[in-house]
Every structure is written in structure tokens, then in C-alpha cells.
Length: 179
Length: 179
DNA sequence: TTAACATCTATCAACTTGATATATGTCGCC
DNA sequence: GGCGACATATATCAAGTTGATAGATGTTAA
Image (cartoon, rainbow over all chains, first blue to last red; front, side):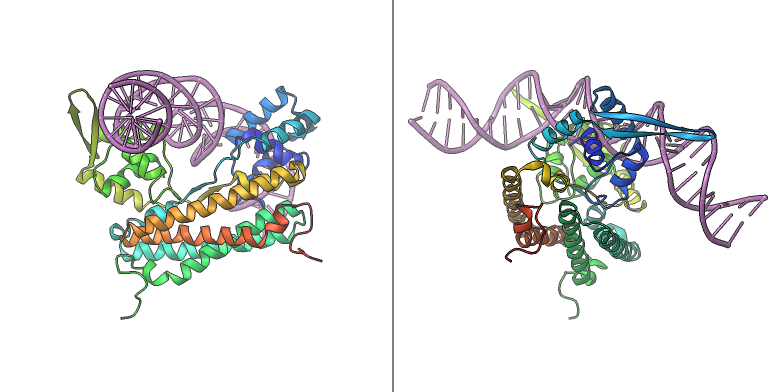
């Protein structure tokens, strides 16, 4: 899925500026499965405007930078529908953390401990963020997506907890804590 | 993390061709958290050879296409260590499936049912693949990474199972199956 | 008042993706 | 034997994305 479809999808929920689209994608309730940067969003919005899938309205204020508010057209709504009926692509998951874990023997206990601690903190924060997002939202589709995120984050936290011993010393046999 | 570091990391476990590196990254036991294509691997290997972080040995066979076997140098091993001590980047997760779930009301029951069914099948396959990978491997770091994948895949399967009712008709209130 | 942070636009080099092309070997099957 | 499908192995490239940066202004807290 490309950023153009992503923009259409976010604009489906209401008009927005490029800045707001990025915020929704990268920091909002959906940020656990979406990502987009300015460098792809702004060109996408320009292209979508040209193709008349969105409209652009510039709000100009004296002595303030203007904002460009984009909104979905009927054509845009159809294009979104069409895109949603394309063959579904597989999820993408990339984890530098897991990559690092492969090289535990190169890392040293201190670095390893720090990484594991950081990861546990990150997961807890993510879980809080997701619970907040769930609380602020009663749209069924969104709840399904956020719930999925919560389920996976909880599983990750649980895995980290049960593997903490082997995690801080991966070179040691796992799951044989105290012999 | 860039593809150069990824190549160094894979070559740490032994020499390989570009083809094999891609296979390890995209289909091997680590493919649930790593990804790389020829278009990034081949340029990366060329650069790494120039920088003397890897060596290249060309195996020529008469009447067979030659293969270029790459191996880590001592400098390369140091470069890998250095890269592993860089600040850790956040995981990346992108899911077209979850994105789609946001627009359940645009989709129609049939398409939605098909997607959910497909996803359950994909998750089961992924779990099998991970269990196989776990069985073929007794390196502690790898087991930790694969175990993490198994834990999250199981959580996803479980979530799909408990939310199947609301999933095939997201426009309906979730978690109120049989009233 | 001053620094930090938020809103909003936009750009761009470097990198990655995804598809494709080329050549040959191997395996199963009728 | 021959045929098609798949595996090994190289490589390229347009199009798209990332990640960092720049610039202008507003707001908030110390």
C-alpha cells in the first residue's frame, strides 16, 4: 500500500492538513501499524489533488503561515474503495531489537541489560498509549485494530518477562535459570 | 539499520552469496523481523568489498554461471560490533490488514470474511514456519528471536479467534456475540 | 525573556522496493 | 526423452520512501 492510499484513508475520516495526516499516521491511535513522512505525504497530496481525488482549500491568515486543508472527493472515495479491494499485502515487521539479540555474544552484558531494560520500558509505554487510544475511540474497526495492537504488545511484554533471565545473558542456556 | 549492516550480520554466521543473504533475510528463520531485496543487497556488497569489510571470492565453473562468495574480514567484524552499539531504532510494523479493518463498513461482508479467513491461514502457516526454524536451530540468540516471533504470532491467532465474530461483521458491536 | 515545544509548509540525497531480465541446473512426470 | 516448474545466481532500474533538515510563526512554562 502506498502513501496515496494512506492519505485517502485518513481523509475518509475527515479533512486534514498534511501535517495532521502525518501526525495521525505516526503518533495517533493507528501509529502501531501505519507510518508516513512528510517527504512522501506532500508529494502524494499534490498528486491526489491533480487527479481530483481530493480537494485543497488554502486557509490564509495575515501574519500566520497558511494551512492547506485537504478533503476527499466522491472520486477519491471510489478510489479508496478500489484500493481496499486490491490483493492484500503481507504485514511488514522489522526489528532492530531482535536483530541485535542474534549477536548477544558480541554485545557484552552491560549493553545487553540496557537494551532489554529499554525495550521493556518502550513496550509498557506503547501499551499505555494504545489503551489511551482505545479509550478515546468507539469506532468498531478502529477498536479491532487497536485491540490487535494491545494483544500483541501484551504478548511481547509477557515474553520479555518470562525470558528476562535468558535475555540478560543470552550466551547462557535459556530456561534453566537457577541450577 | 541499513542493508550493509544486515549483510555484515548475516556474514558473521558464515560466508554467503548475495542470493543466500537474501534467502536468509526473506525466507529463513529470521524473516519475521528482517527483510532485504537484491536491489539493496548487491549494491551493499559492492560497497562493503570496496571498504574492505568483506572479501569476495568468485567461483567460476565452465558452462555455469559464476557465484560470488562473500566473507567477513576482521575490519568487517569490528564494523558490525560498532553498528550494534549504535542507538537502537524502534521496531517497524506496517499492516495493510489492520488498515483495511478500519474501513470494514466500505468493504462488504464477503470481502471481509475472505480477508479474515486468509489472515488466519497466513498466521497458522507463519507459526508452523517459526516452529520449524526453532527446531533447526540451537543458537541461544536465534532462539530468543524466534521465540519472540512465536509468542506474537500465537497472540495474533488467539486475538483473531476471540474476535472472529466481530471481525466478520465489524459494523456490529464487538464482544457481544450471542444476545 | 528566553528556551523549548507545537504547528505547518516543503525539499532532497540516499536508500529501498518490487518487478524484471538473463542464464543454467535439477527434479518430477507422462 | 522432453517438457514444465522451480531453484540457483547474477544484476538493473524506475518509482517510491526515509530521515533529516530548513524556515516561519505561535504557545507555553520556567
